[in-house]
Image (cartoon, rainbow, N blue to C red; front, side, top):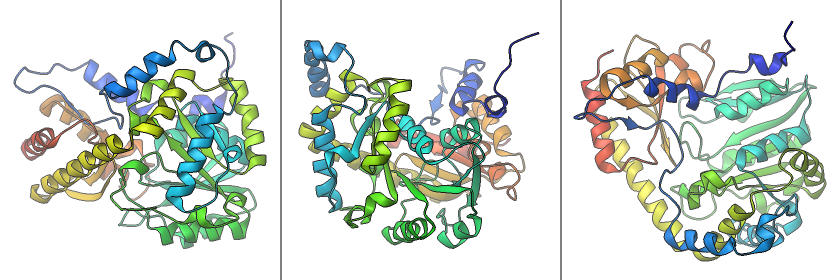
Length: 392
């Protein structure tokens, strides 16, 4: 007899990016058509030289090699509070900021403070798959909210899903996987809904540094009572190319962070010390560099939009931050289409079946996500040529 496995964990789908990597591990790519990998929303280039130098210097600090505060370095928490207060036009205190081991951990901790097995959380579809996976593992129902044709979730439809066991609404903007940038008014409406119904509003802004709009994307922090409802999540990984160092943030009410501290202490004890020092250096010194990265990502977004304007039968449903979300013109479902693209075009993109259930009027089967963070304009032009040449 074998030892038991948690049935909720066993029922959770496998990590999609790892599944996609298995496709390319089993494939052979001809020299004239090397792999074009548009599957993962993470920069592969190292941090800029100045940041690497600061990280190397941090290695000489004895405090960087021992346990630090569970909720993060005080200097980093203070800097986040100051800069976020200024950029959002609100009032955020350092003790309303927690530093986490990546934004995924921030999400897991936030959910742990809100819900338990048997509760439900409203999750728009297409979803960010790790959000869905964590809810499934915890035995928390993901109450699915299909987005409209513009890839926007609708507060009115969300209100219809709320019952006595609903604990929160989760929003991601700019969105992963669709790239949609949610208007400030839409976020205001969700804030009002959640406050009125006594729910938490989790807003994951991992990709906020690449929003195409100037100024604050919303005014939620300008509400003096924001912390009775809002839980803001952020990642330093994308802005400063620190994916391997796992540094994120959670901004929430003090009493909620006191509960989150129990989760963080149990799982990692403290965030990565070198990564935190890198994030702090980046916030203090690399604003102009990040602005340049944003301009480059916006140029790639424009290039992607141009490619799909020329492709017959394809439709770009959403585009922004690192992502384009598209409807393909084929009869084959998206998982088979994505695998065929690997085999015949050396092109790796993720199928919509990884971001939505397969019983939603064929939406998941008819869509694909393109992550273009690591493809320049020439790479995206090559993607366009391969898609134009593809027949399943």
